[in-house]
Length: 280
Image (cartoon, rainbow, N blue to C red; front, top):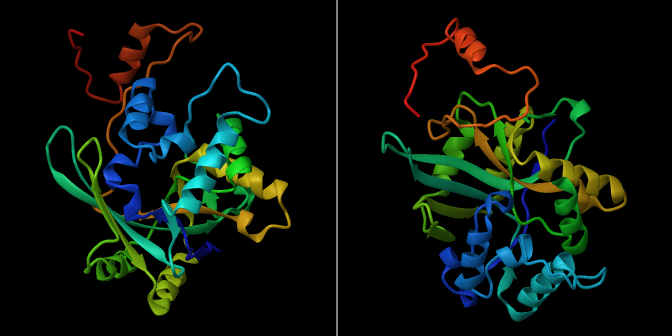
């Protein structure tokens, strides 16, 4: 049984400034150049917490993780981060453009707490440097990014509920550096939350992205058996049948493969696919 719960997150308040200057790409996509740009964008940019600057003088009591925890505590105390008034699920819509065709799509999902399950339970399935993320979680005791979960629901009942919830003004609306639009609506109505939970209960969940974050959450749960909150992690849930869910081609380079001969690969590939040689 997949257990999904509403929660009361801390979110940036208007005091923090322009939201587009506060958010970042996922930590494992942030280059040194991007990190510098985020640091310059705002003193409250989240990069200071999720991927702060290391120093040669770091110690066991003053390091990238302890500084992250201090930033978090300071921002909460100063009212930069404010906890939402009521537990909620969050309808999360991402408007983006396909790189080749230019087609505009909207990926529709929702953010909530998902119970962390052992893989052996048959509820969460794997698709694919977790020590670093575990240290951050230990020091801050907070989740800053979501685990991207897919669930199968051909009827689209949850999507319809999210559409209903998205009719008013969003709680957040911003463009990121790639011109993708991110919109968020708080769902606090208990009957709507209950209907989403009911539809999600029988779902089998597939981790589309965030395997290290999920395994970090598992490790943290196992370290803290007496803490109920440690049994859950922040997740974004997207319907596999959603037209806004696209899987695009990616390019991978594999090195140092023993006995690998490119010519053999191309010859074998021709048996299954249409292969065209390119100049570069």
